[in-house]
Length: 289
Image 1 (cartoon, rainbow, N blue to C red):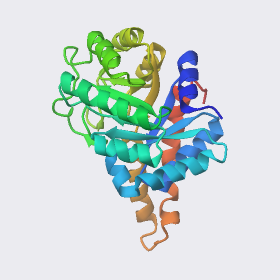
Image 2 (spheres, rainbow, N blue to C red):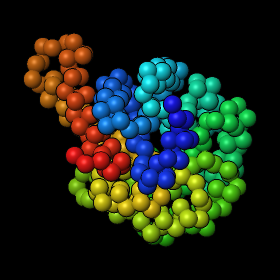
Image 3 (cartoon, helix red, strand yellow):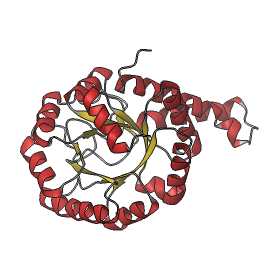
Image 4 (cartoon, one colour):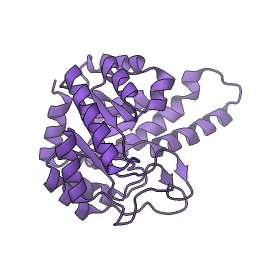
């Protein structure tokens, strides 16, 4: 089976993207795996610090790697890791990739800490992919009434080509997640900000490494397709799945208020999560419906 690095490299070449989906319990994980197996595409499952605290990092890794042992191209990322302590924890647990999120820090502090993370992780296992984040895009996957305070959405706030080039050169990260108009969470009363596709192309040309699009929930298919053509190799979606899962769970509980078996209650949320994931993976991989 190909390694995650090889899969990302192949995605770059074909101008498609690997789907990244967060999970904290089995229904979303199984939904993603079933769809990936159906479409015959690789996926990355992510767990944030909070999700790891809920599941246990070792347990999350064991679940994903047990599925990979069955021949499924599924990998696991330590998403939005904000301290060296949690980086060490993820590396020890056996994560395939680690995102160090210094997006809310000053450029200088972000470079300093990300460089330390890269040096540490590569000393432990050079095969672990390290991703850096440059530019603040909010910090939570939830439904929003307004753009997160401080999030970079104006052209003056977005990641610049100069910053991206210097950041990659100094830190030696394997992948970069820039702020290009994307935000974490999903606006409920307004359309998402448009992605700056020209900036995606310019950053990709300058840094030459795989780019990652975070916060793609709510972005139009055309925007996401344009970002992938411009150099995005991994696309993160979480809020859209959570919102659909929660709505289906509410309906499931109302259908039979006396039902107490979790696997029956979670059947509809799992199916709905799978529908959202399949729609996204078809867009990311240029697959027809």
